[in-house]
Amino acid sequence: MRIRTLTLAAASGAALLAAGLLPTSASGHPQSPTLREGSVSAAALLAKVTSCAQISNGKYRTDEETSATVPVCGKNGAVFWKADMDIDCDGQRTAKCNEDTDPWFQPDTAFHQSDGKPLRSDTLPYVVVPSISGTWNYSAAGIQGAGVVAIVYNNQVVYAVVGDTGPQPIIGEASYSAAEKLGIDPDPETGGTDSGVTYILFKNSRVSPIENHSTAVSTGDRLAKEFIANN
Image (cartoon, rainbow, N blue to C red; front, top):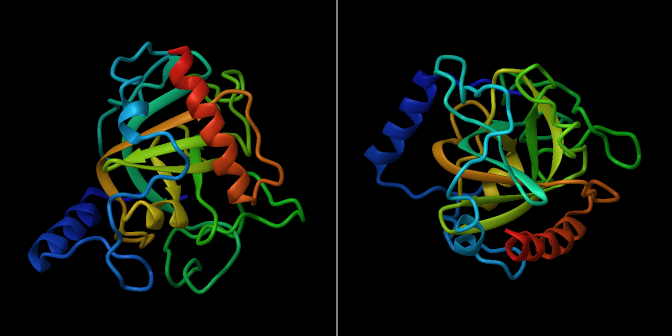
């Protein structure tokens, strides 16, 4: 779990603007802002989350220094929030995620692969949920580890799983792989994006095994269609 500071975020944004660069993947190639996993469009999903019926007892901060402005909202069959994206590089040590690349690196995730190992952030798209608190209890809301999440950003849709938990007052974080797929800078120290990310978590869903991304996509596509039909 990383808690990005505003200073780092601002510096990263300024550097990108100054260089005139598009977000790039780890290979250094610009990523096209047109990715859509499954058959449901970003616009179709966003049309169903234009208003918020708040289910959290309060609101969350997106970073340590920001004020609490983000509620968790309820819909038929899902919960959602709109926030930033910080980069979670925790879990298995890899060339991209380790103590040298991530000052906040932790060699574990709240939920584990089918072989018992922590998740691998640089290959598995997953989302971090706030740890249970008086503000909101994700488990009581029907959200569980390996649950399916639709992440919508810049007219793109990526499906992920609930893979880790973070600090109680903070919301808006996903794995290195999730960011990279969306064309967001996945650097755990200076990457991420300050706004514009919608997270739709489908209730009572589960991908088995959690590390099977293709199952997350097929299940997510089905649940997204149901979500649109029922809201």
